[in-house]
Structure formats: C-alpha cells, structure tokens
Length: 372
Image 1 (cartoon, rainbow, N blue to C red):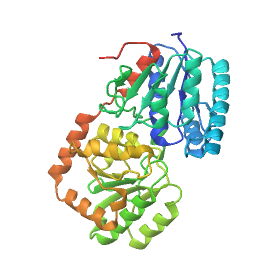
Image 2: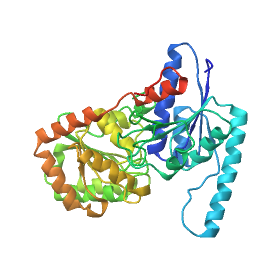
Image 3: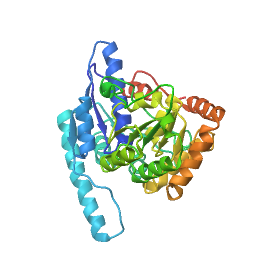
C-alpha cells in the first residue's frame, strides 16, 4: 500500500457503529504518524445529525449517501427499497472514482451496504467489522462479498465457521483531547462516594431514565452517591427537573463526549447492551446492570448481555421487567456485595481485547497477517 493511503470507513448513524470506526481511524493515524506519513480517511454514511456532528467534532471528512433500511414485506415498499439501493450504489461508485480508496471498511448500519458493494465491484480490498454477538442484516449480506470479517465476540452467530473471520474484539476509542473537552466538570463530585453512570447510549433511553429516577425515589441516603446521567436529547430537561425535586446533586447531560473518562471513575453502570458499550465496560472493568434495547435488530443486545451475564461479568434486566422496584433491588444487592462487584470487574478485564483498533488498522495497512 502507498505511503499515504486513502481509506473509506462506511456506515454509522448510531454511536454503536460510528465509534468503532473512529477508533480504527485514530489508530490508522497513530500508526502512520510514527513512520512520518499521513493517511487520508473519508467516512461515508448518512446525514443523521449525530453522525455528522460527531465526525465534525473529531475532524474527519464525511460524505452522505441516500440510504434507508430494507423493512416490511409490502411489494411496493420492497421495490422502493431496491431503487434506494441502486441510487446509493451509484453514489458510492462515484465516490470510489473520485476518492480512489485503497481500502474500504464497513462498520455496520444500512449505509455501509452500497459502499462496500461498490468497492467489491471495483475490486478494492474490503473488510467489515461486526460489533454484536448476532450480526445485523447488512453485515450478513456483505459477508458474502467482503474479504475479511472482524468480529467482537468469539461466538458470533452465523459466522462461527467462516474462514474469513478474524476475532479481534470491538475497537474502542482511546481517551483524547476531543473526549476530554468536558474536563470532568462534574456537579459536586466526591471521589470517596460510590459513583453511578447511567446511560441509554448515544440516543438515550426513556425507560432507563424513568426507572433509575423511580429507583432513587425508593432509596434512602441518596446523598452518599455520585450520579452521572446521560439522558439523550429528549429527556434532558425532564430528568433535570426530577433531580431538582428530589434535591439530588447529579451531573446530567444529553450526551457526554468524554465517556471513556467517565467510565474510568464510575463504580457501576446502568446501561443498554450495545456492543460498543460492552467493549468499553470490559476494557475498564466497569460492572454494569444491562438493559437490552428490546427493538434492536434481531434482538442482538440481548445476545450481547447474555454473553456477559453467563460469565458472571454483568447483570441483565429485560426492558419489559425494568421498573423502579426491580432496579432498586438489583442495585441494593450489588451495593451490599463489594466482593461480587470486584469479581465482576476482574472477569470483565479478562474479557477485554484492548488492541482491536490496532489489529484492524494493521490489517488495512498490510503490516502483518493477524490470522491465527
């Protein structure tokens, strides 16, 4: 590969897809910087505000293509979906002609399909990265075309005996100046107190927000906790008002860009079970109460959560069973069992694969063969 390669990272829309791509992009930059060279990276995905704003924050150029998920059995809608794929494929082929990538990495999400397929048609080397224990439809389709499949779980459903698979873990962002810009500006944070980190992912989770606040109302001595609560844009005002009524000091924001730092100071997370979140919990040894998003494609978050719970690394509560009472009970059991929390942390660290970003970057650059 040439000294200043052109790399396309395709997909995104949600943090679960986008942040692993950013982690690989950062690793590509670090590797080539050590040799005195640069890399030209282009993200191709949707025009979703979260995606465009996040990539702008990290300084990566981005192009949006017209793409929609294929859903439903209505013949008219299927015909419409096929027309969208053709449009996005033509757009992707134009991007291939103009950017001339040396490699294309698909990171999941429906926008990655046409981009990776276009690269395959142009005989450009490709790989896909699957974050979940149950692969999404896009990656299941692309697995037939791509040269390499990077997986985050050792047992990824449907890929177990595929010779293209490389089990490397899920790429996780390293703490950097972008993530630390909030400078841990936490409200009345006391390092001697037990710290909760509550988050529903990049888009928030109304059920988790509501259940956690209900649990706090049922608990005594809430002043002995630090609480960091990522609400999502839709619930920020409402949750701030509830903390005010309860007279609880908490750090509440719609979204935190310095999540790796926050995870490093937390003692327990209450969170969804996206693959990116799970990888970050493992890397930092942060025990979690996992509430899988019930409408995730193929219920993949439940597969993710079970993979951790079965190894004693986390506790799972199904979304339909999540109430203030059930969450309070699980929290109090964990608070009374410090040895149990320590054990969960140790198991998580044993499961961590901290160099997934470097392994994928090395493969893209052709530095070494990582099969083994």
